[in-house]
Image 1 (tube, rainbow, N blue to C red):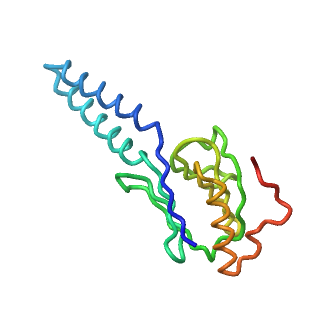
Image 2: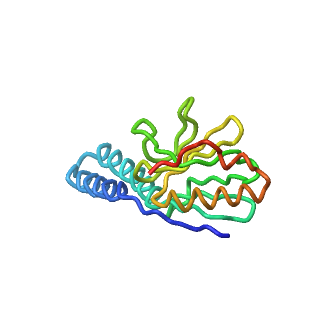
Length: 162
């Protein structure tokens, strides 16, 4: 069983508008080189962020689950199936936000858009992977982790959301 799904976000469109505003601002700043340089640097930084978080691809890579943002692939993660001890559908909170980040107690979040996610337990660690295909992703991960002998990944007694 293979899994390959790409989710496209919407936030990058807002960032592209911000880049355009910065470029217009740099052009209007005319005779102020320091202001122009600052606006151009900020525009470049925002452009890199927009291109990094335009889509999120979750893919089976044999013994690993690969998580990649793109089209500029600066942020990625590979999770060995053998380390996954639990899989359940979940919802991230507003505090989890979108992107890649760590919150104490809640763990790592890899999310592009929306709040539906799959919660992976790796021993004492938690990783939340946001997706617009949560049901299929959770089913795939349960089947794959069972292949690796992680029967606890079924999470008996846990209720499915939605």
